[in-house]
Image 1 (tube, one colour):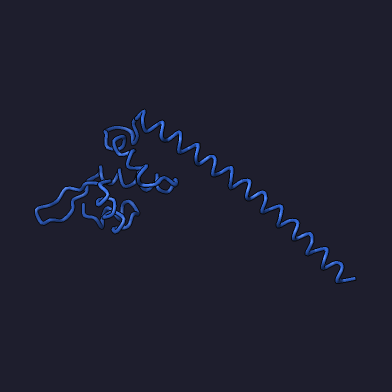
Image 2 (tube, rainbow, N blue to C red; image 1 turned 135 degrees about the horizontal axis):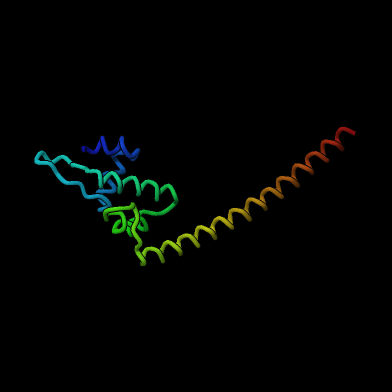
Length: 127
């Protein structure tokens, strides 16, 4: 399939597909005419890259997934080295989530306090 068809099937822009190719994340065959020729494996890899990117993983990290993605069978095969990196990435994400929860709680407290003060000010002005 040509790049436009791959883009439609995966929801990934042509520009991003070219970037994936430039980064050696996908390696389409070339037709005699010079056009890229993507196959079902490329589509599967692009879909996996998109999902992993949406999960917040960076391309450098995703690149480590590719040996697991390129094999036959399920989309991911156990890759011990990668599993250790994934555990670390999940710990990092958990730490970030906890920081966001604390920030949200603090911001909510400030907002409630300001709302109460504003309501008290309005009540005093109405007297």
